[in-house]
Image (cartoon, rainbow, N blue to C red; front, side, top):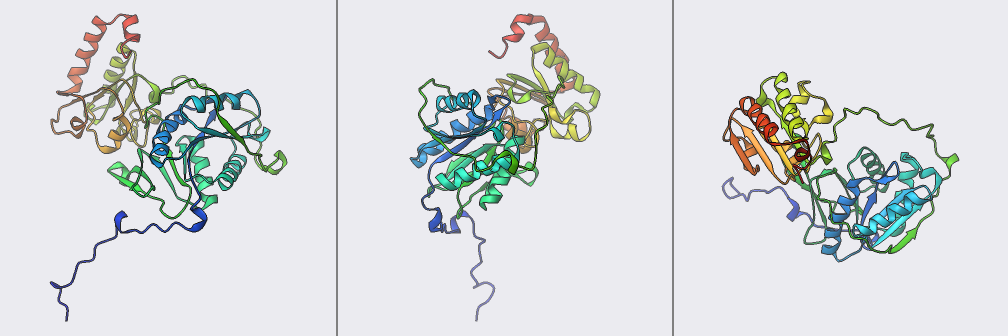
Length: 369
């Protein structure tokens, strides 16, 4: 008779305990694909970042890297194809048809789904933009495969499975997700999470065209016109070279002016951590972190920000992180390149004054160069 002390404890199965049983219909799925998002005539930069990451995955798997371009016939698509090869693609799949002139979920999802079913990639990557998130969800649902959203890291496991890492539990933990028994393995990655690869001019390589199996009359939604967003005050944090941000350590909403003053003095963008947006102290387009903007500036100055993992994953790609905090045990000091233990409310005006004295208008523009 067994006793409690003699009973072998049961261990919850983890990744190592899950047997990969890929159905026969998926065994000929190969190669890594990156969807190139066209944004009003140009390729969204996140597509190039994904081509750089896709190149690493394809090399590990010893397969080809392909770009996917959907759009209207003409120069815009041809330019995107040339850029795909310049950023590392081995081949490019094209679906060019008039209904693809503007993004609509139905024709784009149909085009990409048909491409996948015809040419069978094992990995499909998209940018976690407004367009990419909408398209990825529809395609994954139609294909009945897995989709890992907002990834911060991609890798290939020993058995060739895509290991997609993303924050979970409100950004307090990182988890790695696998799609073991379905293909393609899909993931979206936010802009600026991955580094921009080097662009190398080279001739256009192999291009494969696919016909869209929809005509305009088949599509329910219609594009009546395009109204650009003319809000000039909207932040461009993701692609700023220098960023100054404030957190709860500043104590009051009026103290954010100290962050703005420093940003103005050095020609930087200004932002904040998530709690300040939740308090209504700053608009959501200024939020930095996993649920806000991911940034990769050459210089990032964080004032009064504790540095929880939700914020860390949004800034750790910065070349130089300077942290200002009164708490010497704040998590931000674990990944900052330079830490200053002091009161940001007193330190920021002094730093702003020092920069103002030493920087001419021309040198401010060159600060991050």
